[in-house]
Image 1 (spheres, rainbow, N blue to C red):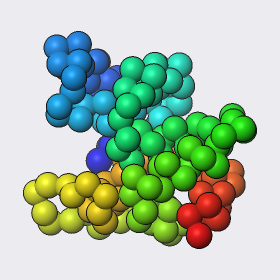
Image 2: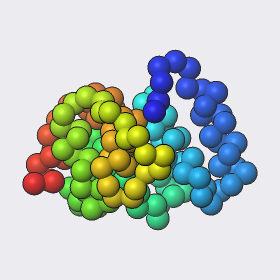
Image 3: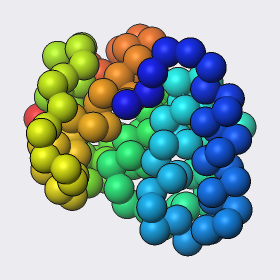
Length: 142
């Protein structure tokens, strides 16, 4: 989970790790996109999303959807639908507008509730800061 404080050492560390392991089998890009989104470092965020355009994980898919909503991208609804397909639990959790209790499990299951909780806990603030975004996403998810 992202903690309050200085994110910049963590960002530098993530960037170094991605340089050493560009295939990123560790999912460092998911952490980095959360940091960039939290700090509104949109240009670098766009580069990561482009570099990993084939990544269909909810960490990147929901971030793409949020940016598409913010920029009124014509295909924003389709981008949101792709995000929902990656993990259907996230819209309802975001609509609770709060952080959630983390699972006691030591791993995250793709497409399941524990993955959704992890995404929401790391990305809820930018969604809350974007007026109407959660409502828009919830409507598409119905």
